[in-house]
Image 1 (cartoon, rainbow, N blue to C red):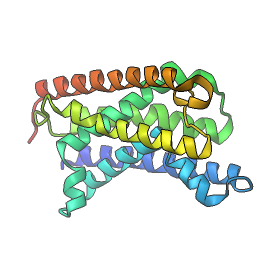
Image 2: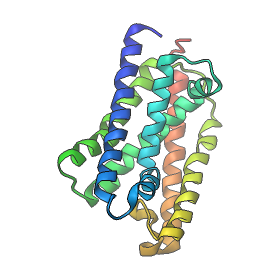
Image 3: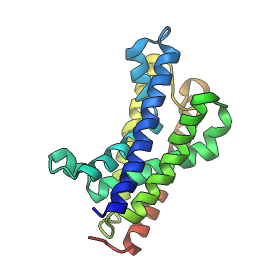
Image 4: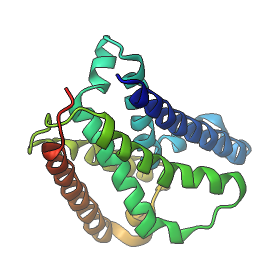
Length: 210
């Protein structure tokens, strides 16, 4: 990897890992007396924002070390890098247009909120555009990428039925009911599919850099 791309990978990886660590510390600190560390950790990994930022952190970290292990080869695949672009891009879009008006964080929470939802998405999408290999994605990839949010939705509903707690208001069955939840989920799924095809279209017109 060229030195400028390596340094850019460092920036993206540090931004993602530091945001994840700070958010985890803030969550543990605010829920230690109520949830305890185990349920707080479960809650932490139940947010799609956390999972998409974790995917970015792992993808850029393995791009740096260029590991030849099975895990390293997986996270350096073009399809995984494209899936990370899709997930972090949708994270930023949904937060900006839907969720940002539902709460007003302050202090360190405000900082980490902006880092998770704006800084990391912009950095990673830029990294994917200028540093990743291109012309390797297929038009069928967006359909396969839908499996991740679909599994996440299934987990969210199972966890919600168990704990009566949902990470996002548009899937909160206890408040909006199943018909509205299904309608919202189809809409989010359509956004994933549309943005996925945009990613593939961009990938196919960029130079390969292989």
